[in-house]
Length: 620
Image (cartoon, rainbow, N blue to C red; front, side):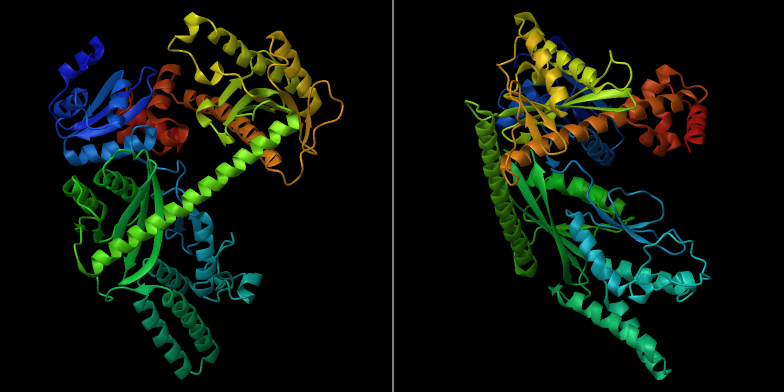
């Protein structure tokens, strides 16, 4: 294999110690992260002539630089690898598909009267977390049911127990009203603790205690309280009756994991067995799994899933053995506070049947998702056909570009360019433009600047010398099949002016979208195009426009926030422009800097212990 002098030098100098390696392409983008007990042996193995699969061969062709980080043990390498993959999401690593955070149920246990909310971020603030779940809607539905059993607080009152009256939720039995002293702090926290145990799948103790309290209340002639406890028990039993009993109640809590695969993606199904009952299930899609063995896909799922989940059961049941079982088990033991986790591959019996059931569910889920994806594809094709007909195009507009402007009274204006190809967002081709030449709130002039810069880049890329440059941007190399500017006739006129300057008027179909009535104005035509209200073409135009608007606002806020971050960091004694850049590059955002520990701050280049303490104090 022919290697550059730079890469050969790196391979020759690799250490034989444990650590993580970070592979980058010619643009400096991280494309793969891995770990190794022996960095030298592992990294050099990528450059052998007989590589195992096409995916690895493609990865190696794009490697232009390799960095490594030494650690003290294989366990430290595992943890560092997971953090790097989570931060950079390299394209050649297997990843959980959604780039958003999954929803969790959060019990604010650190508060005197804990509330129960839904969150997408775990913070070490004394709260208890349950999840992750794949559907926020399903989480809210579950909480609606649980609130009828455990009527937790949802208001923002300062709970003193001395309020004159409770809210309507108390009257409809959806709150226990600690605000008026209807329940004391100990009783309320006991109820929330019961809710937590219920979410963990352990309801036997709750049921036994409530039955005892109901009996005592009845014997004490407290019939109203006894009736309330009876209703609570019935509600709990209704929920429990839907949970399938698969083992005896003293069976070790387990997660049953299996998967199905198609077209480079894998669907992982997880059954949650708690207290001997199947209390729930979730599925997760893994991308980048093509040509990767099942065991490797499962390994990556275990690392990413259990890095996110707040609790780890005592046993994992898998469909196949995994190579890294020992080190993953060691890591999971630390996550359970030293309690042992068993990883098993059952060959027969009820456990094996459960794994098969999980695999069948994964296959059914993947089939349903595939049908949904195919249905979406049909709608996209119909939408493009609608637009082709409406604009009288020779071909469907497979590449659509839409532009929008966002600013706050003309300050820090930003233009957005979003790209849809074959009816779907192509986010890698989205671009934003910080407005340079326009003073004040002038969206028309800002749109002109954005379009001039976009088509100016296209013109440069037609130069044979430029197009071969590493700096060539693929987003600007192609012309759109349909150009949309948000803003109706006014913005359309500016777009026409720029297209004329570059000799593209008549070559690129262009339209201005008016917000009020979704009217599409085109050059040399007095009346706008009105797409039918139920047409897929209109839905696509609206989606493209909304995406351009969202991206413009996001870019504007990011620019505004960055300015605020710079000002705030610069105000810290000892932090100048150079160290500000170092901190932002090292941590990525002001929030990450604020949440970093003193030790983490000191790992940033040039940050001393004293300076780290100052940063913590100033950003607190």
